[in-house]
Length: 341
Image 1 (cartoon, rainbow, N blue to C red):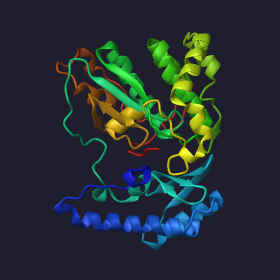
Image 2: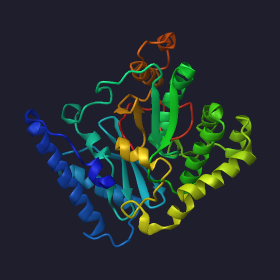
Image 3: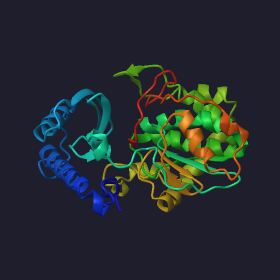
């Protein structure tokens, strides 16, 4: 099933038929937006970010959601990130430059009682002596970096009591720089796993240059590799090998293979993506099961600690309950969100 179909799926209970009617209305809105933005067929013709923002506000106003405010528009390759505010909550929209809405952020503007279950509602977590914790991300997804900044303190607190693996979503939304960084972090994890978090801590600082209130670029790679004491020559050799093995550059250039015609495939963790039915960045897997968590360090520590057969003393550590900001930079704080790339 393709990305768009997955992100628009929902489970319906008999007692929740009224929610279904609301959801159907939202599907109609998506179709209307698509028709309006692309003139029915995707011709490749692009429209400006300003036009996209205006159309977004007009359509939501027309169906009774007045007060949606566009905070900013950022261009990322073939798409726009439209940052909006609705009743005090920041709501992101990813929209391709020919006007197609991507992902499930549309759902987040509906009042809480009409949404799907919140991030803290859990299915039963499988327990083990040493939990396997896998975080699927894109290295330049703003919500992926938010999750990384939230989970790293929890991973560092638990240390070798858990088996942590950084995984990668099977497609790219942020171009060649994301392909390079995903590949780099994958290879660091292979040749020097004990240095991965040191490197990520540095890279996630960002370059310090703000745009619309966010730092959107990672920190200098050479500086971070040196700071983490990673052998650059060994890394380059391993990256070249992995690039060939997984056809990273080849997939970037082969647009016929792109997901939904918009995004290059990234095949390093493709089998695990299929196994776990990964739909976006970030996605948290614990002991082979998909779980949800708020993105602050305390919440991540709490949810991971539920997976131990016998709870270690590290689980009593008090970590911050503040949600990190999306994008890069360790200083800012954000709001709790279930948004994905």
